[in-house]
Image (cartoon, rainbow, N blue to C red; front, top):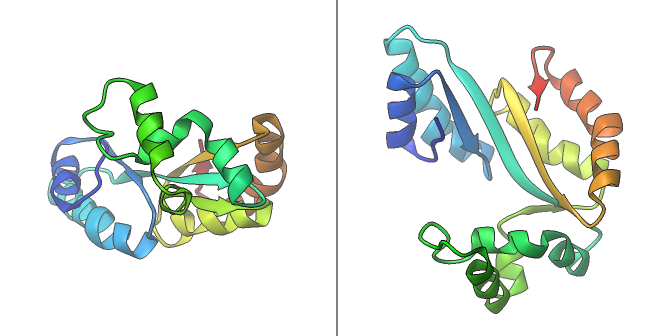
Length: 164
């Protein structure tokens, strides 16, 4: 079950087989999501599987990041939970300031930046599974780089880590 706060995390711990959470600030996520989930799961003697993710943009600067986000920019637009038309969200996002939109993502220039963005999900959050979500102007190159340079570093951070 996906959870972003203490109430949904507690519910997940009581009724779900695992937790999915999106992480911007690892310490905040641990306090508000991971700990309530683990407490509730422990009370019922359940496993405590955690999948954590983080939204990142692989880009050399704000202009490239803006292009890489493309239609995904609407994911951070106001009204995103109520909207039914992705084009409407894109328009709303394009009306927002670039700094505001890009501030919702970890924008990194290279493999080292991706490792820095995702390693805390393993080491600080204690995720069993990390879902790597990267927007890039060249997705094929990004996937190759992640496989060759990022995943080995994340695996080295925790021997039980299973990237998805």
